[in-house]
Amino acid sequence: MASEAYDDIRGALAEYRGHVEAALGRLPSNAPAPADMAREAGELMQWALQVLRTARTRNCNQLDSISAALLYGYPGPQSGTLKIDV
Amino acid sequence: MGIPIGGFGGTPTLTPSLSSNPATPASTGLSAYAADLQNALNRSIGLAALPLTLLQSQQSQLSSESSALSVLNTQFSVLQSTITNLDSAARNIVSSAVSDASILSASAGAGALPGVYTVNVTDPGSFASALSVNSLPIVTDPTTQNISAASSFTLTVNGVTQTITPATNTLNALAAAINADTNAGVQATIVNIGPPSAPDYRLSLQSNALGNVSIQLNDGTSDLLTPLTTGTLAQYQVNGSPATPIQSNSRSVTVAPGVTVQLLKTGSSTVTVSQTPSSIISALSSFVTSFNAAVDELNKSFGQNSGPLNGQSIVFDLKRSIHGLASYTGGSGTVTSLTDLGLSFDTNGHLNFDATALSGAAGAAMSDISSFLGGATSGGFLQFATDQLSAIEDPATGIINTTINSVSNQITHQNQLISDKQAYIKQLQTSLQAKMAAADAAIAQIESQVSFFTGLFQSMYLPKTQQF
Image (tube, rainbow over all chains, first blue to last red; front, side):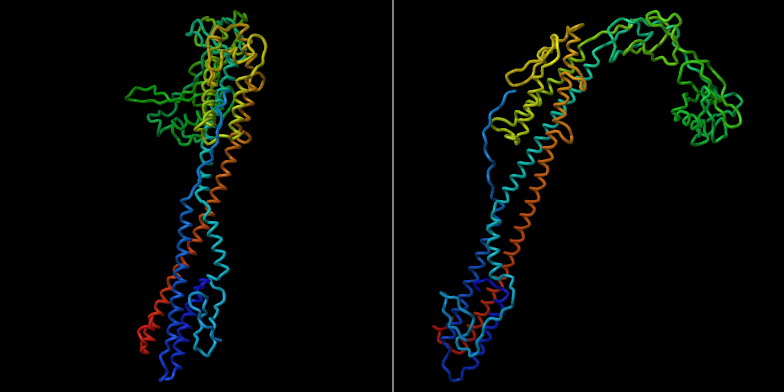
């Protein structure tokens, strides 16, 4: 997530989902509700969302800065001279 | 291996805490957005933020310089042409006048000496001519008929033969073929000697030279022409000599060095050749006008609101050259500078020309003027000016054209820089847009996963406070 390795994020999310499902599947039927697991999963997803949204915003700002570069210009050099008579 | 999730403060790995199987995210190898590439992109974006418009501004400046140089080139080219004209005028300071223009006309050029020449025309001469004979087929339409069915003819003029091959078998084509032969020595025409009710077109040949010139056309079988007029040579005397008039097969004759007359009719006329500064006055006036225009153009590169060539070495070089042109001194006698020719400077660096200084010049004064001016290749002011302007205007080595070429090369290089920069920025833009799209897709996937987990844990009847 932090390194914006988008190719890997998709697979990692699917893998994480599989792990959560497997973990829940191994719980005995009379086990208490997995509140801790739910909390951790929720916090992880929220963190992932925040990281990705931050990254997207940064990319958007960078794109804007490139576009702004096209509008940026310096004034021409000023130099004083004297008219020379022949 | 299970690593507890540390919440938002750390960098949690995607490993469930209750899993007995250690899971590490499978690495897919090189990712398009791996850390190294991300760092490279960050640096590139920083570099791309350099002002592209600065390059374009520089390009605009170079284009302005190129345009200004082109204008200067034109001005100095005009100045150069006025020097050429002045050179021509200096070599043609004589004029001629005739007392009887019906007898002859005259022209005086380089080498002509002032004086009065008397030309007595005893015979203006005449041209020999011949006409196609009566025994030939009558031609009523020269566009379709001919005086002979031959495809090739032999033209003999004063013993010199030419083969004439008309394009078609018509009288018109025959005449055209004769006139097309520059060595023929005759001019062919077609004349109708019949009444309107019975046209009779004939071929008529007239020699180009005066005198008794024999003319004949043969079609391989017989001669087709009969002599019509016998030409005579022109005859004339110059200043009463020689006793036996000079004979000429041309009416254009040279009666003295640089003095040519055209004999028109019998009679006597004088030709007066005199030196006059009028052509020089006219040429100097043009020189002054173009000189001032060049000065004005150069002055645009100096002072406030100056042009794009402000500060460029070429304008100083041109200023120095043009100053040297106007400051030339040389010659001997009464004319040693342009001031002696009536030229002077005003406070704006412009030349003024007072033609009265020259208008009355004659005799020794004209000689001094000629000495000062010299010639484009023989010395004097004209050679100096020619060399100066050649150094400025030469297409290959002149300072203006070499500068124009240099600026042109800079513009080409600048265009390449701009093109490269734009391509680079576009590449970055594409990359960033792709990253944003990938982020959007990942965000959508996570949000979907959040929904899934919500449903999953809620289905296990979690208390509301522990739902996300």
